[in-house]
Image (cartoon, helix red, strand yellow):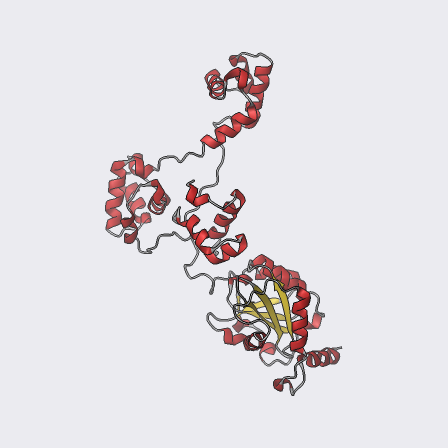
Length: 385
């Protein structure tokens, strides 16, 4: 890989970056998880046009570490090249080249030889459409006619049915277009694709991430009628209250009593959000664990995990309709007195958040007949009991 692509990213971070990009997360979300700026994430992804590197694997024809160790043992036992090859079931020429390539019989070391072979294999292989000028010209001509890579690939299979060298997959065409470092096509050909742009989004992922992309989301329209009239306690509305420096806290508001709970959230990662919410909800009495209504933010993509952990269904608002969880929206407005917009909220402990929630729950509310949310909740639980 080029230095520009990898600077500042460990191998683990690069692997996680491409895994999350392939899963449909945005540049900002990936940056928050990895502790990097979105611009840094973009720089890595744009170097490959949004197409992640293929997972590396060892060819079945290549010598394994175990075989190299057997070669090393054979050398130590003064076996001939033919004797070592016989043990491995390999040709003598393969064993001879392996030994000579890594210092000869006196210097051969299995681990070093295996590591060097793995590094050599990282050298970029020439892309087919960069190496085959005739095929390149045919593909480029069709792309300029606004044909999609899929259409070009299908046409080649039909037109050159008996000439495999003139056939190429649509994925290879996409890689040749978007991974400009390979130099197969000029950038101007990207403009002929129906979906323009410098990055190729993972298949099945919308460009408009963050809204309406929750898998198997249960619509708010399927919510039980008892939630709407606020007659039964235990139905909650939730959201993330955003602060500066990509910080946030989760807010939960009980619809009947307007009782609020604040939860420390270190990241918008959906798995972490679901786990933190579930931990808080499980501490409530069973009669106060009935449902949760949330906006369409991807931080609740792991809603199934939350439901499994709590037995509480999550209902999602319609796209761009935050007013459908009005109690939570109103409460978040009140919370801005304690957490102004742009204020970094990452430094607050859970104990400090609990103290803020206690203050807010102690305020009398006109909608509750001037009871406080804490008094209303206590009266509700006493009535149920």
